[in-house]
Image 1 (tube, one colour):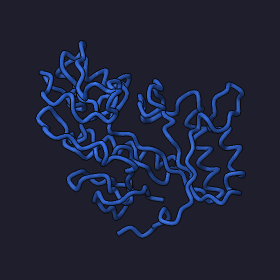
Image 2 (tube, one colour):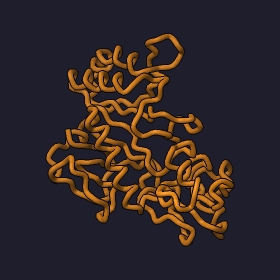
Image 3 (cartoon, one colour):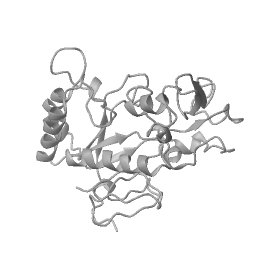
Length: 263
């Protein structure tokens, strides 16, 4: 049972760090600039800030192509700047939630680089591969007309890899217990740095069965506007997934729409 339903009546302010406030004059917003504007945001009467992706990224999809889940893009500052920001929010009674983008990574992520390097790589099964081009490769695109396929051939990996979004965003194999454990580790990491919850990106695709044998992919229309609970509700996670240890009484279903965590 979830005791703290703060998000039900929260007043959320969603923003992109890179376009909000620039503190060092380089023309790009950063956490130090955002920290300077907290009194203004507090004066608006908001109770939570929702941050769009700010982790390191090649920037091919507005930051939704993450190359490191445990860092801050250098353009926006450092992890220390982020912690200073969350502390400033806490002092003003403002919670922080962040986008949790774990359906896919950037193809520049270390995991994918190692996965494509060899078929016996420990990271190989962290992604979805096929030896031959699947028959349904031209179906299930999230961006029809922009994407030509959901499967692309990787010369280095000598196999086809699955991507529901762009070809530079290979899908994680979210049915892999090691991937599931890593996702929970990512969540715990940011919670320890002051995050109160997550807006989970592409929930229907995260929980869907992936692979060359899937004949009918999840419709992209079911993904519109979807988000999910994190540690305190865990509602984006199937019941077969391991439960995180950061909360005493997590519940696990896939019916909810907003994010909350342990604090």
